[in-house]
Length: 327
Ligand SMILES: [Zn+2]
Image (cartoon, rainbow, N blue to C red; front, side, top):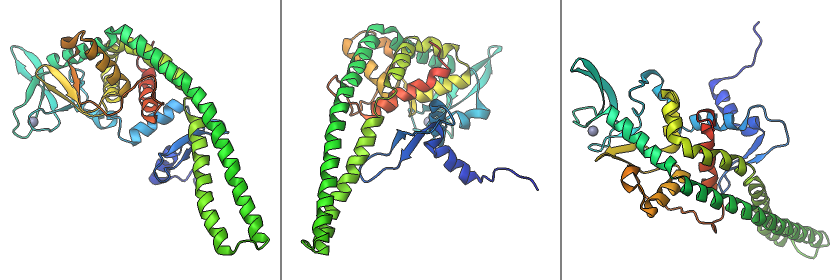
């Protein structure tokens, strides 16, 4: 009889989802709090970056698997462009003319939208180059982020101290209530009432403690790669093969791009890059060359902001490019 690991597709999926495999323990979302990962005490089985890569694929953030069989070097943006006329997804193909092959991104099902692939591809590289070229903006932003994380560490120490005290107080209250109950000073109903008040509070404090301990464990690593990488973003993109290009695109643009009037616009862009683009816009430099417009998101970054999970996610997403864009 054949021996081996019995692993149904569903089990495998759960296994991949289980962050214990990269040394972190997953704490599922609880009430209005987000789910979090905390660093476990065991040795990781896979690296953290591989873990997040797998998560991204499972979450559908990477589109590379879907595009596997239809990848064409002349059409790196195929699958990432939304039709400005009908909102459908543009495809792409070659047509013969003038003794050569000409590539186009175009719409389907009777929609007439069509754009020359080399122009769209070129404008895309221009957009990336404009970001890379603004080194001083990138450097300044690095400093701000570094400061934020640094002051966050102080915030962290204070917050943990406060939480620790609160946990102690709540435990004492529960203990006292139990003594009162045992001595017959309060009845069962009163005791239940006290427990119902303090137990959830205690649970909430323990979760906050975990959440805060997790914060900014890797921030320096992310900052040091991401902000250097951004300065050579367009070069890295140009050197990459088509599959890697598409990974870069999906990290930077989690939602589709619309190419219209010689510029790109998008609903969602990686928050770090969005902040840099906004700064470039505000500076009024290269306004024309930016070729990238985006609907403003609600979150803003300033030195006084507390580090949000979103910023942390954005930094980590860019760090995934470490295997593609070398610094
Ligand atoms: Zn269309």
